[in-house]
Image (cartoon, rainbow, N blue to C red; front, side, top):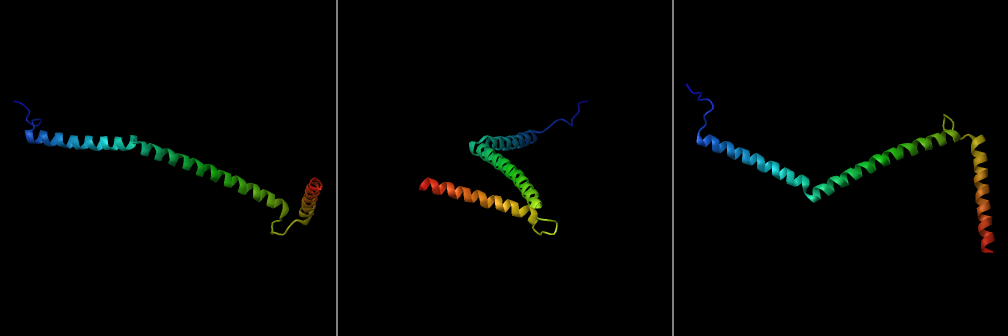
Length: 109
């Protein structure tokens, strides 16, 4: 005796073909969107922006750490300036500005 559980009617076969066509059409539409030049450019831009954001974030953290370390050299734990370190640096800065001003003045004269 033949197994009748695998026998399908023409309507069932047609419905199955219709469903498969719809799935195939959706898949082709999705592939079309993925390979569209605007999508590729958009994905590339998003990746570049992501990389830039990541790099800028790392740079910010590094700069923030460096500023904190430098600040710790000139300010104590309570936030008061360490005059024994601030005064010599200020004197050197004033001296350099003075030398630059003299150099500029001599070139003009």
